[in-house]
Length: 99
Image 1 (cartoon, one colour):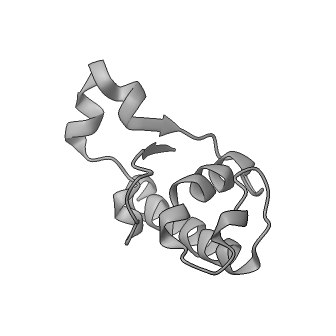
Image 2: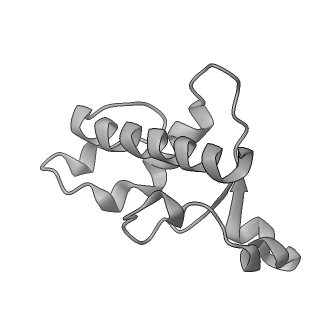
C-alpha cells in the first residue's frame, strides 16, 4: 500500500492518506511525499499501525496527549481513533484498488 505523508495536519478522511495521480507521477519527490507499507495477509500490520499513530497525533486532543507512543499502544482513546482510521483506510483502499 502506498500512502501519502502529511503528519503536520489533522486528518479528516482516509482519502487524505491515499496519494493522487499527480503525487504518484512525480518520481523525483516520491520518496518524500509517500511511504510504502507492506500489508501481510490476515494479520495486523505493525508498520501501518505505527504509521497511523505518527500521523494521527494531531487528531487527538485528549488530556494525556503527551503520553502518545508511536511504537506501541498506550492510550485507549487514541488507539480507538487509530483503529477506526485503519479499518476505514483498508476498506477504502480495497474498494479503490482491488475492484
